[in-house]
Amino acid sequence: MQAEIITIGEEILIGQILDSNSKWIAEQLNTIGISVYQITSIQDDKQHILKAVKEAQLNCDIVIVTGGLGPTKDDITKLALVEYFNDTLILNEEIVEQIKEMFAKMKYPFTEVNKHQALVPSKCIPLKNELGTAPGMWFENNAKIVVSLPGVPNEMKGLMQNSVLPKLTAAFKLPYIFHKTILTYGMGESMVAERIEHWEDNLPTYIKLAYLPSYGKLRLRLTAKGIDEQLLKEEINNEVDKLFKLIPDIIVGFEENETIEAVLGKLLTDKKQTLATAESCTGGSIAKKITSIAGSSSYFVGSIVAYHPSIKIQELNVDEELITKYSVVSAQVAEAMAKGIQQKFNTTYAIATTGNAGPTADKTDKTVGTVFIAIATPTTIFSEEFFFGKPREKVIERASNKALELLRKEILKNK
Image 1 (cartoon, one colour):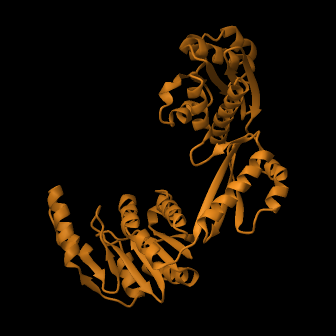
Image 2: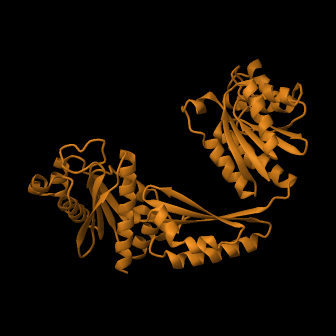
Image 3: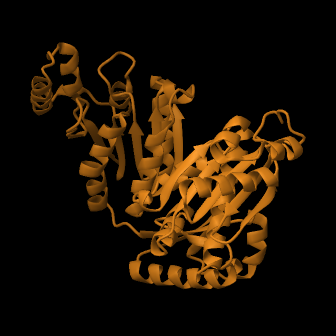
């Protein structure tokens, strides 16, 4: 069973907004066993809409369209679908009353323009929109489904959850799709692929592996599809066990609930230990990652973004002579920063970063992309030099991930 998602709107095509609707819809369809064949973004143009829906129906059993259902003249999806299905519009009194009640509660005037929202194609099943004025529309055509939804994210989600997903589940006998995503840090995609090549080559035919690399980390997603849910889960878990034996040194956990930030939080909580960060080139990115975990206040004390050399000196007690002798981008300064924040906030561990994120090297002799990361532990302070390349965003993200990876390894060493 396959679906295509069509998003309508110039704002997507000119880059004014991100198409978050397609991502969310694809995730929801996947949970009920429907694979997404294609995602298409198109203009608010009738001929373009007609062409896209026709092509989608040739490829897929289900077409979900979002956008272009507002009350203004640039919203033409409904009229395009009327033409596509050779239909006419009829006034749905139930929708009229719903809109009137909604407007009365908000103390908004009800106008003829709003009444137009209650005009729906006679061949569709209207889907009640509890959060807005534009109803969803469900069409059945030659044993295939076309669904039209508002582009407003909360309205679209409400209609999907309350109407579309239950109706799709009832209409089709759907397979089960099971995913398991393993999170790894510290090794590139090609090196990991080489280490697990034999295992990958011997996966069952109904289990697929996808490599999902990003800055400083690699996700390995296993996907199984079939009609026996229990069998799929057992087989996936068997393969995961094998994988853990092959690359135990780089596996952090599972993406679903074990990001490196979450794993660090659990380690620190279990050991009743604390952490602080002193960040220069990463600009608070590490602290942001750590505090994204609920309950992080129990182990994360705080951070200082010591961007300017004067802040390193004043707030972290970095010796000015170190900066003069070695420059701010150096192992010596990184370690002094880690020691300074550890002592200032009286924590078990501390992370410090200093480097050249770019685009220029400022007043240092270090290449853009060079970063020193220091870790202060209860017994020692050490640092490592890394080169993360360009651009600036890549350097910051990779440095932040590497810092968390180094700290995790150090805590595990001291178990």
